[in-house]
Length: 594
Image 1 (cartoon, helix red, strand yellow):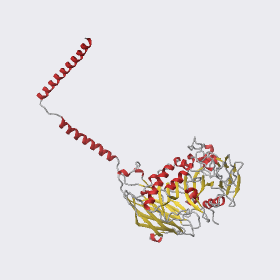
Image 2: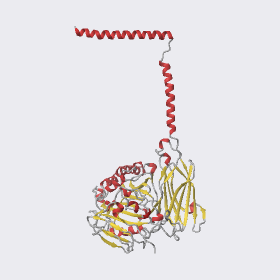
Image 3: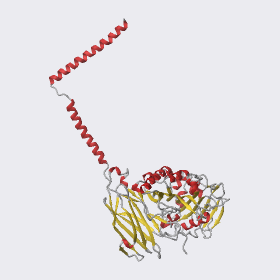
Image 4: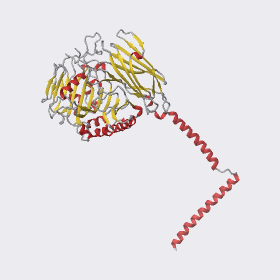
């Protein structure tokens, strides 16, 4: 029997609680999902979804779709929008598969893709620039730097999730900012898009100090049209916040966040070790789960439910074994699912709500599904002129091959040599052999870069056999930039956007995405002190030359006798001037006396 994945659970809850977005009893829904993870971690997944009729949206009657965002989409003729703010790295080896199967996750920094209604590519790009600049001001982000060099047009990596009757006029554009730092300046506009704006409901748990202290966090905004079978269409906005918090780190008080070593009498040591002594301690493996509560993790309790949401919904769900003791605030009703691990709570309409799990013995662990594909991407090589890219794909399945689309968006100053693409496969027997890349790559979409105009776009359709590891490598050349194109921290390197992997799995209703980590590309960096040295040296030479020539042109060369005569005349004229001044002064006084 296959272990249910985290995505399957979230989708099952969404189907059970919300049914169809068109026929739901309420047009606004919100839910919090909590699951303890290994290594003292806790996954908290917040989901907010609002529906507005297409006719009201077109007439600018905004209710659940915020006016600030809705007018931007209308002005830029954007039919579907997906925006991601992500920091950190998802540890798939310890935490299992990604929430929502990666469909709500973006690459490190900011990632944006949208379908825009336009007559041609030029018009679509003009509206894209309007969209990015408007979103930059709305979310206090640097999206205005998504220019033509950071914009790509994926072919098969993304598909619209909404219903578009006339898809022929839609243009897909994709942009990334891997160096963008996500902070509270982005969280505040995100909260303002919610109907209750963080005052009531599960959004009251949001705290920038907790959210951005997480090991991994992702904020997403999705806007798409949804149509039912009878032709009724809605504009749906879905906002999601996923974070992985460290329980022990989150429980520290804000006024004392620095971890401090415990005293010797509080150490738990394994006394069975032969080297155990007063000054030597081998830590004893814990056999109990860590205790935590919402108030300890988020620094506050949940404040009721949002008045616009359905009060009968189960707003908070927790995935722990049913035999584990869980204490909730009185007034909340608990419902345990049949899977043996999930329990949901219906909250009181008002008043604080807290959820607490005491420290208990480890009996049954929550199963975590292994990811269907492991991906690793690094830059190899040495020197300032050339380098290489190495991508490793691992298929943990013993029986099934994995088909996927690999998408890379490379900056224009990284020039790949596609003819050097090579593949190496390692089977379960550990034997490594090189094979032609065409045996694994079934389809290639390549758009070369143009210096300072657009980047490189590469999409590969791949298949990794069961229980195998495939390594792709290719060479690239580093361009030499103008000195004005280097950032202030030029020696740090240049950010390369993460690669996007779309797993082709027809069993899941939502697409399955995996994103690699971003990369740092070192480029040949000039000595920026040399221009200033040249300026100083040139200015000194010019000053010396100009002063010498000026002295020659202005100064008068005379003999000693002429100089003495000129000095005598100068002294005589000064004395005469003093006498005239005295005469005029005393002459005025005599006139006043008369």
